[in-house]
Length: 120
Image 1: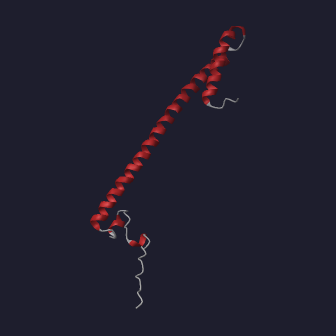
Image 2: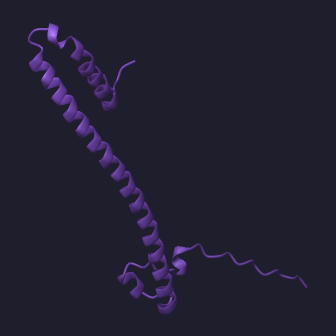
Image 3: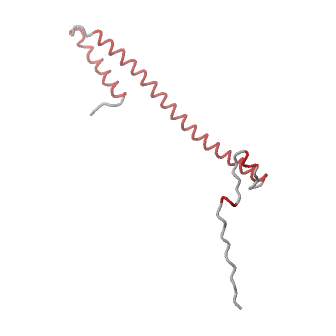
């Protein structure tokens, strides 16, 4: 199985760093690459933790934005309904502040039943 996530990669490299400590004294010239790897793994873990924290904050912000969008939409509809009620449903002033007038032009005309013709 391939370790593709950063968390998996960090854990793999952290395991390498921990396990090679036992044999460091018997491998000549390994100290500089080992120190570099240990430092890079620490920096990567810190960067990954920051990304995870920011991702969580982003999710919270998106949830809040969606809630505020719904609340704002309801408030705007409420304001529009009150404005229509006081100004009239087909008042052209409504268009000036982006409230759609609700004249019959936007709806299908209700078909009235034809009167019955009684033959005499």
